[in-house]
Length: 278
Length: 335
Image 1: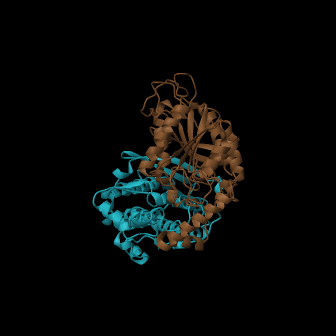
Image 2 (image 1 turned 180 degrees about the vertical axis):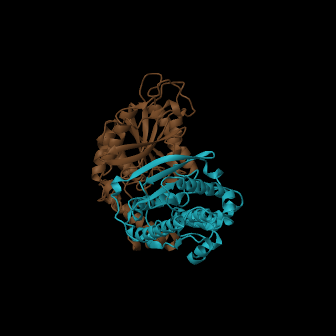
Image 3 (image 1 turned 90 degrees about the vertical axis):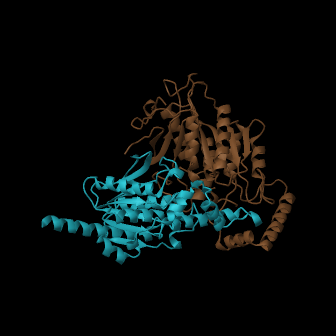
């Protein structure tokens, strides 16, 4: 389902702060006059935010140019949002998703809401969808739980750390995890991880119904798409060089996912119209 | 959605039809007219540029931390995304590094400096750049009189490649992990050192001549410059790894006797300067340097953030009103 894109130059992007308990979430709304759908973009965690920033901004612009309004934001305590990271819990970040979903749904005119999450953001998006938020769900590389997302970031960081260390100075991922589990906060790429966050992350699961698209659609009766991104999608997947791979052309990834969103929105609108007629 | 919090405000600047987005951190103060402090002198602001392709928060959100800190000290602080980066409009391509190294962001950064100064009725800006951002900062300083100082974090003066061949990456990986590889690496470093000694003081072939020329212009004119170095791979202090050309020594010579360049090595830092110890050390050094070179003369300047109502960065009248106002995975590391 293709629509003629608007020139991205003429799209309106509004940055703002959304007030939550004890903090302000930094948001950017890629505003569309009469959208066919709205999408809440739940990005990855902490340092992954930086590596994926340009591709995700481009994704938001790509969708807005095709009449899909997008809201992207920073987690509480990260990036441009205010708040103290090591005081935040996964539950706080879940609340961010719920509050922003509600805000998007209240916008006029009404349009179906798609929640889209990447990595840890996929867990947050999936959990919000599980409790009723959103009319469709798009997940990129969802881990089974938050710990898998943290572990993957940690392993990447340890790999980089080892570049600077020789012989006995080198420490393994297991060494860092042991310290974290013993109660010492760990600083990963400038972000302080608390022991509490690490411990909570094990039980912070992606809902089981989101194991496969088929199981999810059966359980939720709403469209769900799950894509595991490969190395070619770096830095949206692990790998790649900062300042190089994040500037690549991602149309090959964006186009089919836009088509899926447009189709899900179209089906939703038809069903709504049918229900209204009866 | 709000446009401002108690201490921050979201701002936009237009450059040739491209909208640049940024964050303004309001300075702490007690004076009735926030454009000035007690002496009637306009303030100097701090302007952060992107480090390569990173968004304006920088690695570990370190730029947010520094901007907040300087604003608390009374210095208005601005963080902007350059065209095609972060939230700003515009396009970038995979030759971003070459573009930056050729001074591609000089015009945009200089325009930002001018806009910030004009809108806020400020006396000037100190431009802060990290890694590739420091290249843009030097080019910008040479292009605008509003730039009154530079803070350069792990600057480089050569022309690195954005993406090394895979074979080279694998070789480096092996060298780091293997004892034999490490020994061979040391022998290679010594051979390079010998070649360097025999070659005299001549610049390496991949030196960034255009950047060095701009550096010479601004540094020899006496612009206050604070430079930070993080220890590199197999290197200590501000000295380079054995066999590598000492660019710091070279640029200090180029700057000449009248220059006001200060070089500080942050031992606990990695290339990103984002870890707690490093960012605190950097903050302290910058605060002292600002106090020496751009003093705020009002003794009553508060350490508390200004209430939202007292300073407004007025977006609706873009002409002049600021009313009472390592990343370790950086493409350049180890090159």
